[in-house]
Image (cartoon, rainbow, N blue to C red; front, side, top):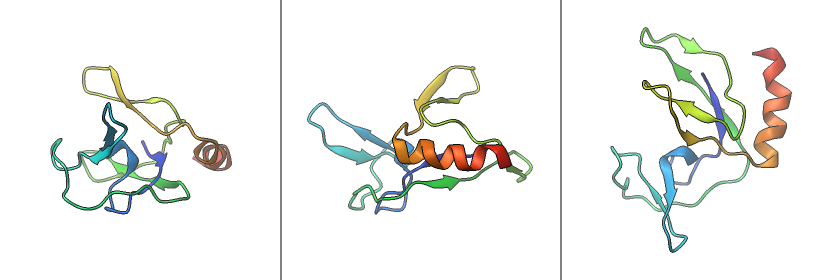
Length: 96
């Protein structure tokens, strides 16, 4: 699967970020711990590819706002549902 999202200024994607009760965003890319870099969401969304266990690129794009499947079948983290991500998905989904 591939997902559409925003890259942060720390270099990680938006699903690696969480917002706490005070509205402060923190990167959790290091096994749930902050990456230690300054975080600021950048503008335009991009396609972020994923790979299977053999290293083959997975072409299916997860629709914006849907959950990422886990090994247990639950949908934990959800992808960004913003209008820009939705527009990019609509542009790319027929090709995938």
